[in-house]
Image (tube, rainbow, N blue to C red; front, side, top):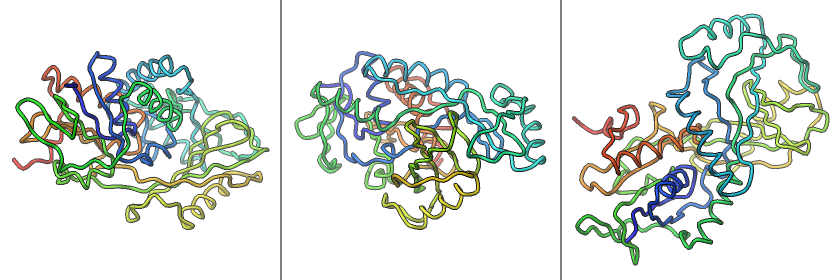
Length: 347
């Protein structure tokens, strides 16, 4: 018998698997969606919601765990995954500059918003009103992380790919059985696939489709992340990842002409140099209306758990939410009410 059967191998599933591994717990992973939204995620981490100038919930704690978690992953997988990169917000007016400086005095934002204008000119971007710098930012190479971690799991005999059959899950005293696998606990980390899960499909998980482009821009001299109505992320060899769109009605992972055109229009508002499209990606992010994850234990089955709803901040939330769920299961630690699925249960 193993300690954990984990369903899903996106950021949520991998984060929980590695948390279990680091705590000497046995586990097995069934990947029921190899083309999860994590595979096309930009992987950005940023402690500030720039659209509203608010701090990300529990940002400082999440950043500490992020740094520790991905450093451990890098040592395990022998590959750099965490690219600490400054993020610059391009200003389009004096008013935007003023709003930035007002926000930098807000409680919780002062550690992250620089009060010095970044005046250095970037070849390929017109910036008459300069930039503001967000601190403690960067990106995780999510696709590489998931690819290497799956290889680790395969080599260790801890991984299978198939559509999980919820009806085949059997409950016995203090354990569950799924086909030939017997485990103390099962953790569902299925992303948007949660809608087919009879144990948790009553939870209000929504999905927002995001589309990304990879462009080649030889004359864009950029070694930082630029954020405007889009982000522009340098990934080497004159290539840049650009995104993202937000579509709340289309729940497919098929790139669209509408998404492509929206991104093209926004790129042209920022870049003054030529570029060409190299790739076009799309995925449905698992999101929740209150912008908090779905973490917790089933109301009837105390060995059935969920880790979902990481949304657009999966690389920041994954390690901390996995740790919170693990400690809740193993030590009876109370989950923060903001993330506990009980917040949606009828009183």
